[in-house]
Image (cartoon, rainbow, N blue to C red; front, top):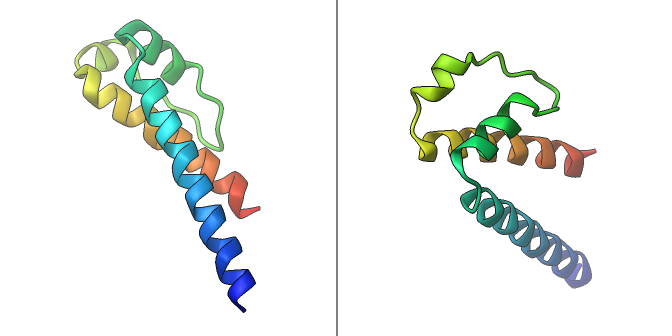
Length: 80
């Protein structure tokens, strides 16, 4: 039972590191790069944001949208 608990803890720590790396990577992107990645995002759902809508958002909001999309995609991969 302890071994299972250790394995689960290791997986959780590894997952946290992955999400932290994703967040750092997104934080380093400029506005054009974030918008481009949102427009080209390939997940189980498709964004339908217009250029005007994206232009009206702050860079922090754009980064949040991208991080949420990537996080959701990663979580679904892990759950399989």
